[in-house]
Image 1 (cartoon, rainbow, N blue to C red):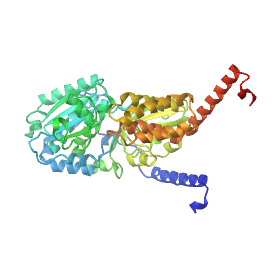
Image 2: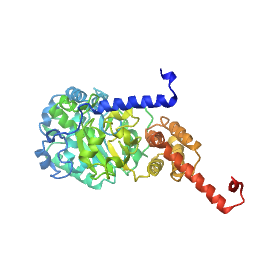
Image 3: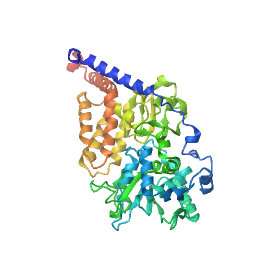
Image 4: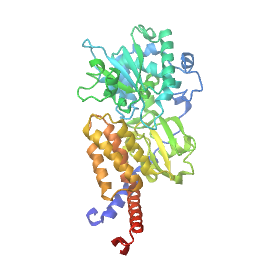
Length: 472
């Protein structure tokens, strides 16, 4: 049947089937509406005391000793049952990641490293945790560290987060004074120390091995893998690097049970999640909601909707600057989880939602992303070092249409030559926004090129009325 259809008809058929699939997902019973009793971050907006007294009132550090007494294996199994996936962007199953740490020590110490660099543009969730709910992170460090056989945790926080670092260190001091950390953490007999390490703001240090290099006092450049950090990480020892939010939700999961957390969202996309909503909305905010909530519902319910109404929407970047943008028709039905966004060739990333209304210059916006990634490339890999510069140069010309139509395909081909050909994912992060722009807004690029060509021809005619173009 498909062979008898024209290419246009085939494209419409596949498009309609994809739309039906998204609509069926939208109609499932996964609408938002997380109840207050199920919220993990109960001081997200800093309305209460961030210190130990306030944390104890909110239920932090409750029966932590009892959880530790259940043993490493029980903790890891509960995390696996919860279905928690990394909240830093990659979405790797957390329980499985924790289990990669060696069960028995070969004499080398084990380390837990918390990635609090949060350099992804549009993302502002981890800083709120550290500023307003730091004890959740500290308790999570103890429980996760114990499950991994680690006696030491390093929290790598970007240097610009001054207030967050101050609050975090204050909370650490309080925990030591109360006996929650130290030689006998929570009276469990487990020695556990936490150190805050301040970075210098480099985006590349959000990559786990570059972060490790930075803690060691070296340039923040990613390492080749293997060996993986779980075997050879910080100071050559077994290490797990994980995100602030991922660790901060662990104590609540272990207290309430992995099955409770798994009851939110869809299969393989479970739990609650912090979403950052910014851009052209009436009420920019950070909000905790259930995974798999429809994107449209999330924006209208918590961010007051798009400025000028939903019909004024142009596109949305659903997961931070490194994921491809989505046009309005897809945003109507897509769910905010890993699988649904992957189906539409985007990603959940850090769940940093950037809303663009019709007043946005979408080409200039993606060109700004390209400039950012060129600036943040560490320069170690040739495809990234050279390719991000080429992407930026071409995208800057695309903003004004100073190009030829063939360059659109060249730009797309360049992005695929970068993607997947670098040590870390920064090359992918630079390529994907450009790919999304071409996929969904190619007519806009073509229009600009055509208008610029017509403008140049008019100028040439005015400067030289006797040129052949004048008699065309």
